[in-house]
Length: 139
Image (cartoon, helix red, strand yellow):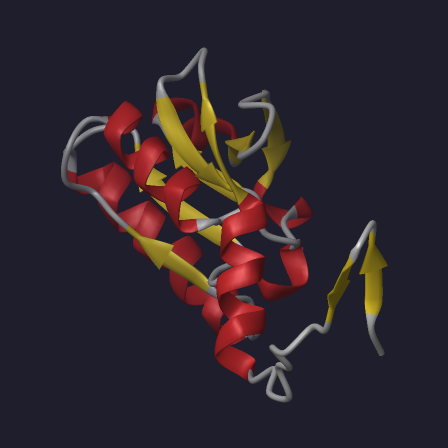
């Protein structure tokens, strides 16, 4: 099919017949990664159904009791086929940033209140909003 532009006749000559999975993947990444100005780090805003993990689990600080409880929660979720990853190194802010950059939609923070009343802080990747919920409410 020719396109007429004034006195010129233009014939498109590039045809792309292939659209493989890799292109879909790169398009998905390109359209999902953005820089969060307030937090000053990148966020990979993946749909929850394709996120690499449902939850990131973090003890608030390096403390044997907090780490033990965090690992217990991680194992319980894994036993229910809920994908998660555990991290205890670095500051809590750096761990949040790594989870956000990886596309993990929620971070669960285990603190001393968790040991007392069985609640945890759940943090949303996109809004950074945090709230306390009971461990039994995680799904």
